Length: 68
Image (cartoon, rainbow, N blue to C red):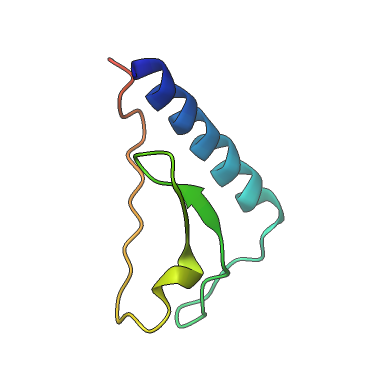
């Protein structure tokens, strides 16, 4: 289970890093582009699934589950 968590964390880090390199910066008030990421159970969740909701919070825990 720990290995899966590390793999998901590494994938999120790689995806986040690659998005920063080619995505145009967002300004305050801009709509976020749609994206899909795995949740804590490995199920894919897309931002578009939350259309119509007032607020959506996306949290990244850097170095979570790394044991150090």
